[in-house]
Length: 450
Image (cartoon, rainbow, N blue to C red; front, side):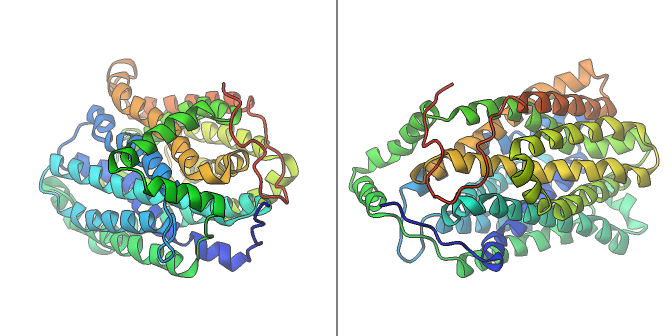
């Protein structure tokens, strides 16, 4: 007999997702502050993609492995997913405390690798955690609530950057930038380190996990009884088997993600250098402007995250997702031609609508087409579809930007806009899994191949 998941209240879903605030504050610092820190420590434009290799590599390895391991985990005291995102938050917190004290470029790059391990360890089981708790009819709401916290965390990170520069930078900004990382930037990292742990603890303490079914628990006990070497090998085989059985929706989504996430990585790496080039800002001014723009699009994400829920229910998640990709493409194609910082707000609002959809709708669609007992590994595979394009971008875009795009950050942002438009056309091929259902069985439990 299938277990019927209880319908949760607004505040239960809210509390469940609070931990994303801390994770995304950390991610916001990575988006906006890490690449400028690399520049403060001597990195050149064409080196930025390769210096960001940590994100795709750790995501490719850590998230699917943690997902597969958490599927086979249960502790009556700690649960299934919560131990992993709590440990990940602690790792990320320690790295954020240390990051602004980086004495050299390669020290900062090394810390980014460890920080990404922590963030990825927290991120994947958190995505599965939300899917575990919610009935199908609440999945769209649950993942869009997650989008709201994604936006809020990044908003706070970016607001802290330009406010601390305004409050504590002053005449020392240029001098600080000449010798290393500006002191005013330290405070944002300290806040991020604190939020990383406290918000995760809030969700851990406020949200109990659903115990595994008798069948799942028997599988977990059988797995735990295996010799250690077999237990180590099992997650790798789980990932391979899950890829073989992957629903068609995920195969089609992988093509969209190839262009979408390549373009997003280009944006995060080159938005600050673009403001130096298009508006004549120095590095500190460009960092502050990038923080303001990232704040704008994430405020837009917070505002539109919940608005997208009824739109997705009425018109279908696929149509909303396709439109969001085209809006984001239009935003990136227009930004380089705007020379007044104030008017960049308009495309950033479009970008925020797109980001809200990207952070919610695909996860909701995938959760509806995979089986409960494999949700962790499939959320990890979904992340592989994110980090593989990022990995490709880190290896290929440096030479592309240097030799094909005339070493121009403006051209890099336009390139990203074109890729978003391509992603939009590819998303038209996705079959919408349909409106939220009352039952808790997936529409497709796996299979379907290519």
